[in-house]
Image 1 (cartoon, rainbow over the protein chains, first blue to last red):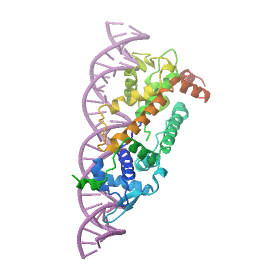
Image 2 (image 1 turned 180 degrees about the horizontal axis):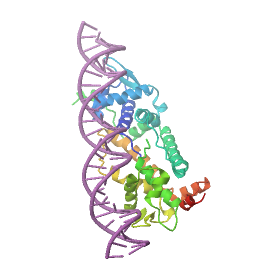
Image 3 (image 1 turned 45 degrees about the vertical axis):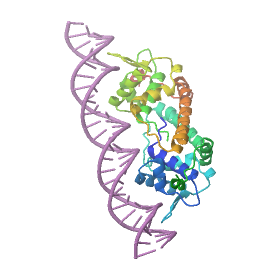
Amino acid sequence: MLRLSRKTLLALEAVIDIAFNARPEPVQAKEITARQGVPQRYLEQVMQQLVRAGILKGVRGPRGGYRLAKERRRISVGDIVRAAELAEDESTEEVLPKSELGARIVTPFIQTLQEELMARLEAISVEDLCQKARAAGVTADDHTADFTI
Amino acid sequence: MLRLSRKTLLALEAVIDIAFNARPEPVQAKEITARQGVPQRYLEQVMQQLVRAGILKGVRGPRGGYRLAKERRRISVGDIVRAAELAEDESTEEVLPKSELGARIVTPFIQTLQEELMARLEAISVEDLCQKARAAGVTADDHTADFTI
DNA sequence: TAAATATTCCGGCAAACAACCGGGATTTGT
DNA sequence: ACAAATCCCGGTTGTTTGCCGGAATATTTA
């Protein structure tokens, strides 16, 4: 019932990737596709949505790429999920049930659940996830390591 | 992000409808489609899944219909949701990310969320929702009332 | 016993959606 | 000027969702 689309997954991985592998220079979409193993043409669309949502900041031209638009701790998982699913369910006309039971009981119930979930997502920041990654011993993928034996 | 399919919504409404408008005789699919305003051919499929999941019990023949297979308090919302979404995501191979960040951080995180949500759904019974309906002043749709002026 | 009435089982189909690709336009560093 | 990156926009493909119809089965009733 908690179905995150591939796009949302991508958005999450991308932002965390950028946050975790942050350097002075911005991170390019190419690097992310290499690390995450996803079609880059699709990734770009997701990145675009994240930029428009004010989560990432795109840097054009050679040596360009993406960096976080604000501090890690100020970006919540909820922000990312909302940004990723914005294009999907816009113009999604809610099929509201006509029955009294549906309209006054199950719909509000679902609504409440949704709000609880969202609150849960807002409470977790990218910084939290990065710390968890560091604690789990995930290594930052410094691409200069590619030139060592 | 919490996307309940129309089928799941239908399943919820149907079970609560049956529980709330329970009489000695079973409730027919026809009545539910009338109250909920949904295509009955589609409703039947959902009912079928609920029967196979052991939530409803189908009674064939004239004067047939559906009734709950167990007590209201022993049927949780989680049971219903799981039954409705069973056919959907069977054979849905999880697209697991190849990156370390994806596999060790975001996937477990999502998993945890899912489990929390499910636990939340398991904790709420059909009886709870019926009580809420009664408290909200929802009237049981006794169809014998159709013959009064 | 026959007919009527309900669920049950089966296959299929069309619209909607998710995932993805391609052609450029735009910005920017060298 | 050129190359490298993001940005923008539209189209395509495959899967899923919602829904329909025919027929089989069980059960009540006349």
